[in-house]
Image (cartoon, rainbow, N blue to C red; front, side, top):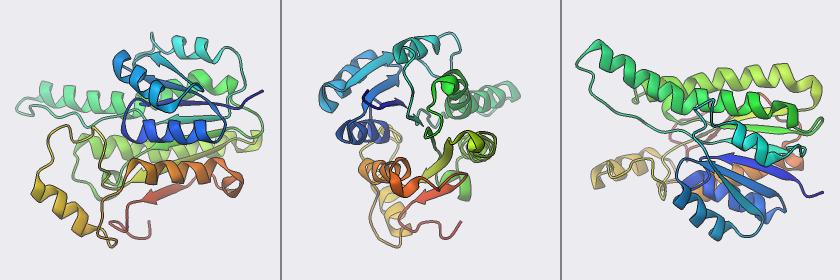
Length: 241
């Protein structure tokens, strides 16, 4: 039977590139996201091996639709890529609480719920769990977003230690500045772009394909002995940790 992968946040950017890479490697791919029209466009781009489930991964009531789509098949790869920077008004404590909860829900709870729901289906041995973090988790600057992405690091280490005996690996990829995604959603200025490029020792921005290639390594033979790691793909913007 064809290998199976699930990619949350699979409609755009890193998620879409990763899903396309997985399809090219011969996987059936289920992409998950909140916008049906965006997912439909991604499925058309990825090809016939892709199907889509419209669901908010941070909503427990919507997760069963993904489990139903897996349909009892062994799951080889789970890429928890869904997440976003959520801004807001911090002028009141209620507003601060709302923004922190929204960032934690989008970036952490989404991964926890999806992983928990699909854990029984993960192939044993051989299943791969990948969490998408951010350079912001290691150098700050994103407020609750930085904190939420850092929480994924601890969660990934916990998954690695608890599932290792079953032959399942769990790793975190922490991208640096990546263009061709919706992350900045009109917030990026030319000055901001130049600053981020200059911060990279390679003097270029990353692309979604750069992150997809890191996923390719982790799910392939070369990544079989790699687990419990934070994999930095940031062009040298943060060194050695």
